[in-house]
Length: 189
Image (cartoon, rainbow, N blue to C red; front, side, top):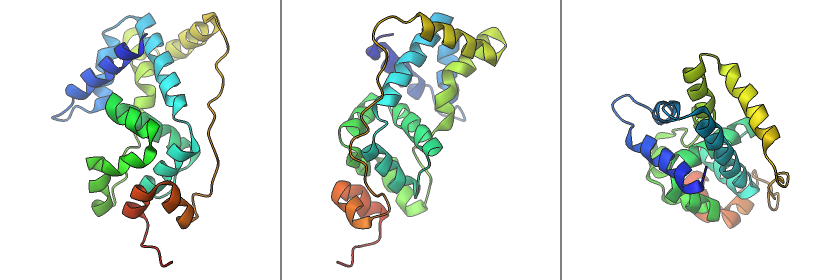
């Protein structure tokens, strides 16, 4: 699946939300209307984009926004960034601190809401496959076959960049100044 087609699916799902219909449900509906091969190709593209933002600077943004962030939560945060659509995904990938401009992030500060962590988006392909076949395990078996059949160089892990201490407020202010201004108490220095 080409990247543009992947983003078209995400954007279509985003436009199909509302009135009790969540994004993950709209995404499952769209994927379930496609072929099994399309679903596998969607998952392949999802994994590639999801992996591309598996970096320390993005994790630091998740840490600030979430008031902490485990590795499982970081998986959900990256799914949430994908759910925001291409424009915000690309902005956050280029500069995670730009999330300080996202309306949901800004609103969450005042309400102490837990935002941008969207676990169910990680499983949209599996849920769509289950809807088609009646068995969720069918997706994982098909996924294993799909991955084994892929030719070309093995996927390399993403360079996570420079690791740093998320619990050091001054380091966070230096690396993510706008998010730190929203989520950390004022510096006394």
